[in-house]
Length: 338
Ligand code: PEP
Ligand code: MN
Image (cartoon, rainbow, N blue to C red; front, side, top):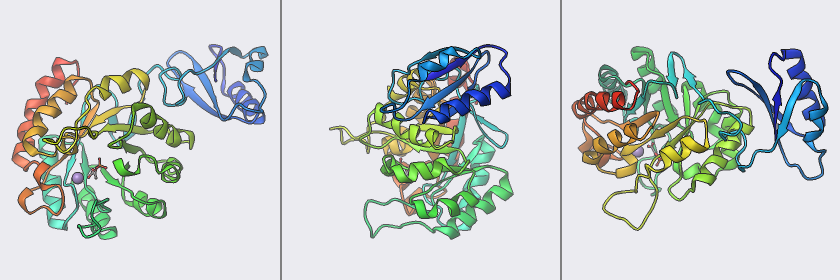
């Protein structure tokens, strides 16, 4: 249910509504819009009092049900787009934000080189995996904490905030110490314990769609993080599994306008995993920006042929620079900048 408060209501009255919501057994979430403040009351309704009783309060304009199963993530609860701030980078605003870097952090020299090059080309956030979710247990699993240290050093030298994946609940705190954005990978999209845990961390979360995740399931996973008290969720389409095998996954660009219609959360696209081939990254990156993506996450490696993971889909720094130049007019054509 959403409780729409009357205009001009102050903090004390908002607190009073939240207290009543809590007493009725629901969790209140305050959403401050440009014109109105609303309190979203979430929780199981069975056996609890009807929130519509609150319409009797003088401070309440109306109490209306949210139709979608994902409540806090839905446009019904918040019409204005959510902007996620990471230091001076605004995600979900007019500027299309590009995150770039290697699939895996492999050495300090590698990550420092890529960080410098992608920054020069206009990337705003450095990506790099230190804990890698590999299909085979015999494949490179990442440098773990040492990799996080290299990422932190790259951030210190370039000023670029960092996004990196966290695989397990037990390492959330450690990863959060080093990173600016916590990435939840495709394979963990329905690890609900992990989602709750990152929801408690107070750091933005990049939530990647699973390869067999419907839009509704995707938004319900985002809901776990939001319901745990973290409003800063960035959704990321990264390709789904279909019958097609010429590409690694099928990049579902439909998801971009669909998610933007259903949710206020920023939407990113990963054309690297979405295609699996470096020469398909640029066209799909442009397509993603054209259809309304708020940002991109792209794999870049100085020597893709020697990469310890995802070399075939990694761009060399010069190709990444070219893509960034080519993306600018695309962004401008849809009223954005880069
Ligand atoms: C990655 O970003 O390197 C990654 C493993 O992505 P995904 O979870 O989308 O496969
Ligand atoms: Mn990868």
